[in-house]
Image (cartoon, rainbow, N blue to C red; front, side, top):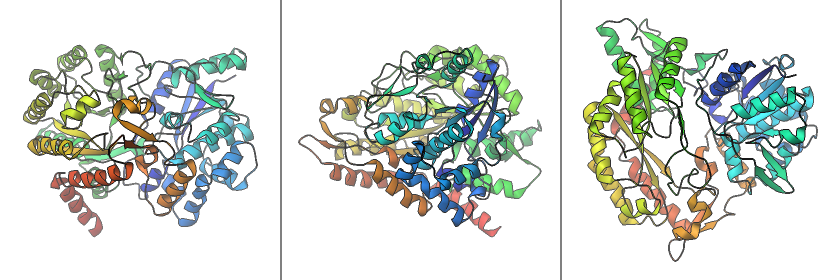
Length: 566
C-alpha cells in the first residue's frame, strides 16, 4: 500500500555553482505542482531538492571527482542493468545521507530540465539504487525525459537499459499519471494494465515508444516542507507601508525583473550577494513564486517542439480560479512577487482582460513577469496589465526578416510589434526579446533586417535573449526538412561525444547548457553547408551581444567591486 511519496530533484552541475550560498537556486515549479495535486488526493508528500546544499557536499576537488562517474557511460548502463558498482553505491548513499529512505512507500525522481548528464544519469542511478537496495516503487519524470525521447535514436542504449530495469518513466505532465498508478497499485491492478497508462515510456521490441500524454492541469503549487531559504532573494523591505516602502518596492522590481539572473555573474545574482552581505535591517529574504496557468501554444512555429504533435487545445485556467490561487500563494509564502511561466499571458484576450479587471477590483498587490505574444496586445490592454502588476514581458520575436517569418509560420506583424514595444516603454513595462540566429536560409540581408529592428527599438528593449537555432526532430522542420530546403545531419554527435564533451566542461567548471541539445545539424539544399552556417552564426551572435545595454555589464562590475572589497 502506497500512502506517501518523497519527490527528489536530481542534482546538476548548476548546483555546484552556488558555493557560498549567496546565490539563488531556481525553485522547481514541477515539484510544487506534483505536491499540490497529490496532497489534494490524500497522499502524504515530502519534497527534497538535492541541489540544495549540493555545493557543500562536493566542495573540494576530491569529492567533485567522484561525480565524474556520471560521464562513464559503461558504468552507468551496467549499474542500471543490475551489476554491482561500489563507487556508484557510495556516491548515491552520500547524496541521500539525509533522506530517511525507509519512511517512504515510494519515490519520485525528477531528472530535471538542465540538459545535464550529471542530472540525467544521477536521476536514473538514484532510481535504480532505491528500487534494488530498498525495493521502493519509483517514478521518474522531468523535462529531460522529453529531451531524451526526442533524441531517442541517439540515446537508445540509455533508454534500453533504463526501460528494462525501471518501470515507471513518465513523459509530460506527471501528477495525474502518478496518482493513477498509485491508485492502481493500491487496488491490486495487473502490471500489464498499469504500463498502458498515459505518459509512460515503454520498450516494445527494440523501439522506444511513449503512451499518449495526459493533458496538463492548472494546479496550485505547494512547496510545504521544502527548505525555502535556498530560493529566496535578499530584497529591500517593502512591508512598512510608508514612502520608504514604495521606494523599496521600486528597487525590488529592478532587482527581480529588470536584471537578468540566470547565470552566476549576472547582475541579479550579484545584487543578491551584495544585499545578503549587507545584513541590513531593511533587507529581507523573499520568495519569488513560479506559477503556470496555461499550457499548449495555439501557434505552430515550425522550429518549435510543439509545432507537430497532437497536443490538443490550449489548457487555460479560469481567471477567477487563477486569482484565488495567487491570493492563497501570497498569503502562504508572504510575498507579492511572481514569475508566471506561461506560453503567453495574453494567449486569450478575454482571460487577460478578466484577470486584470479582477486584480484591480479586489485590490490585490501583485508584481509579475511572463511571456507574451505581440498579436492581440493593444495600448489599453497593456495599460490594464500594468495596473494589474505586470512588470516585464518576454516576447518571442525570433527574426526581423519577413522571409524567415513566413518560412517558420511565425504570424508576426513587425510594425505592430514595434508599436507594442513603444507602448510598453511608455507604460513602464520592461520588454525582453528572444532572437534566434541560424534559422534555415537566414542570409546576410535577413540578419541585417533583424539587426535593424533591434537598433530601431533599442530604447524600448530591456534585454536580448540570443539563441542559436538547433533542429528539434519532432518539430515541423525536423520532421519535414525538405519542405524547408534543408537536409539533416543526424549523426553529427553521438552519446559518447556528448559525454566526452560534458566531462571536459565539468572538469573546467563550466556548464554545457543548451549545447547538449545541438545534436542534429543541417545543410541547405544547393546552399550553405553546416560548417558555414555555424561560422556565420558565431559572427552574428557576437554582433548581437555587442548590442546589449551596457548597464548590465556596468552593474555587474559595480557589484563585483564591492563584493571583492568585502
